[in-house]
Amino acid sequence: MAETPIRLMIADDHPIVRDGLRGMFAGDPGFEVLAEAGDGAQAVELARALNPDVILMDLRMPRMDGVAAIKELARLKIAARVLVLTTYDTDRDVIPAIEAGATGYLLKDTGRDELVHAVRTAARGEAVLSPSVATRLLGQVRTPADPLSARELEILKLIAEGATNREAAARLFISEATVKTHVLHIYAKLGVNDRAAAVATAFRRGLLTLDT
Image (tube, one colour):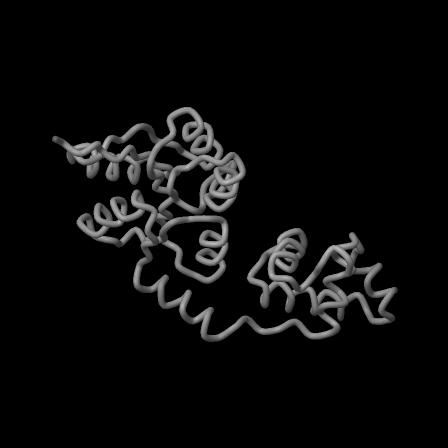
């Protein structure tokens, strides 16, 4: 009895990449390519309609990026396994994708056989990581992120309350420039780019609680 093909969806904003991936999997009877999406929002819409087994997801796409799409898929309780396929392997890319719920994380220089094997592995619900990504994650476990200083935590709490840099400076009796410097340090330590992400990450890591 023939095994049921893995139902696959491809999300990437580059048509050439989508064409290459579709050609790679369409010729294999073990896979059925259901659809292609050019951005994260379209990927979510198609996943809701088609219920794929695995989604090959790029990270940096217009309208909605890959991490936001993974979070939305989780919120909607869509059971598809997400296998990130990207050119980026920095902590700022890897950690949010894994935390959002990606089953695997591969780089676009992955060979055909490795990629096919990775999709089969992801379809079984098993984690699959490129060697460089696995090394980064191990490094995160072995070397915890720099802790925030007492002053940085004070400023982070004020940010969570909605204070501007100027308001935080006034409340802490320091200059606005000093606050800006602390905010940049907070971003670097938490691996984020903006105030909202800093607050969300701080709550997730337990640095902030609802009663702080």
